[in-house]
Amino acid sequence: ALWVTDANEIHVPTGQPVLIELASNDVIHSLWVPSLGGKKDLIPRYKDTLWFQADTPGVYRGQCAEFCGHQHAKMGVEVIAHPPAEFQQWLARNRLPAPHPTDTVTQRGQEVFLAGSCVLCHAITGTRATSHAGPDLTHLASRRRIAAGTLPNSRGNLAAWILDPQSIKPGANMPSNPLSPSDLEALLAYLETLK
Image (cartoon, rainbow, N blue to C red; front, side, top):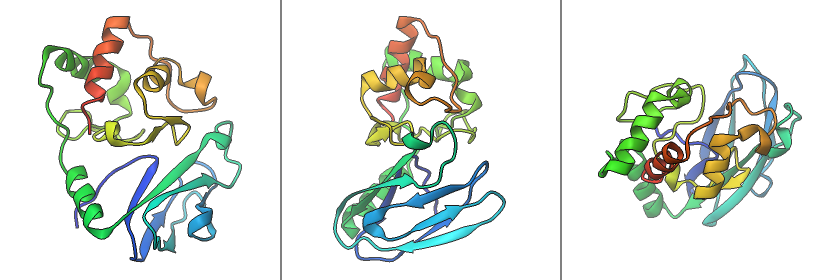
């Protein structure tokens, strides 16, 4: 089976049971998607599983239901249930590597990403960015939300998140990234191609 790495979203086919493997690297969390069933704790050093089934296509909002630190109130997830054929299309798209930059602005944005501190925490398939300390960004532009569900995924929100994540989500592990306006614009242009 081929894996798909995502962040803030769990895509599933409708009408089929789904098994999620749960693990936490740091503190106790609790995955809770009220419309799809109960909640399950994620305890460091222990693995657990959660079964659920979404019978109707749509977006189901979830939340960490265990106090896990400063950022707890802003730790959400969305389960996006697709009809089976649409889910297979989503799966095929998300198994592809990131597209290569096609113009000078997005090429510069990729250079800013790869030369800066971004590569210390993030991966983009098809590039030399391979860290998994933070979310994989290969298909960032296709996600509905960023910052663990805190913000809609828009250019302005992404810029604010990159520059000063602590002002949005105190306690987040992502550091501030002071960039020149031209580097930020190029980086945003590049990240917007990652669909």
